[in-house]
Length: 249
Image 1 (cartoon, helix red, strand yellow):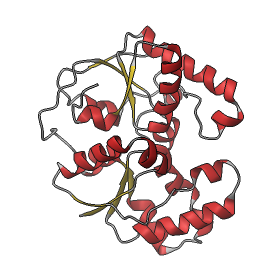
Image 2 (cartoon, helix red, strand yellow; image 1 turned 30 degrees about the vertical axis):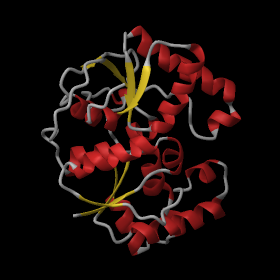
Image 3 (cartoon, rainbow, N blue to C red; image 1 turned 120 degrees about the horizontal axis):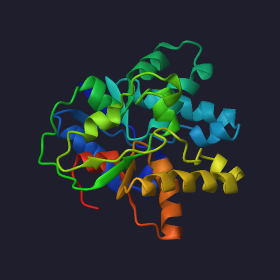
């Protein structure tokens, strides 16, 4: 299979090491990975701000760029959900878009559901207490884990992958799927509320004695990492692909 690697624009600019780690973990599964250089933003910030014409331009560029790949994989649940859930009005049941919609996966979802990863094919160890933050889009839109309000047995694709890492201790949080308050442009428009929600999320991890906070959306982790650094909290942030690779803190 031919994989098109989609890297969100903010990660390309701010977190290139995590982008490289995403490529590495896919490559180590023996997959054929391509990174199309003409890819751009998925349009999520514009959609959040009501700029639909700009979203349409970016949506059509995205589909044109990725339509010929067997799978499209990205290290961001929110960007994946943007493509899957919010492009349809611009395509009128277009065949290329329908293929892209069915082919795009968040990286952990891809490893769990498509590759069906049984073992990490490298010596992975991460001897820390880790708290998992379930971001809203990945959790409820992509179904990376069971939403608590459903009151059904809990299952998490992210935890299933993390449990394959030697030495890791996953801590129990009081609220498994609480929003961190980032929400893209929400954090700009409602700054005080966004920060308060982020502080609550961090406190849950601190109260559970987590040394590291992880998740599948660097946007959420970025928001909380800023709060952590400003308040000198004794906890680190690490994207889940970095932990699956056993990268040091």
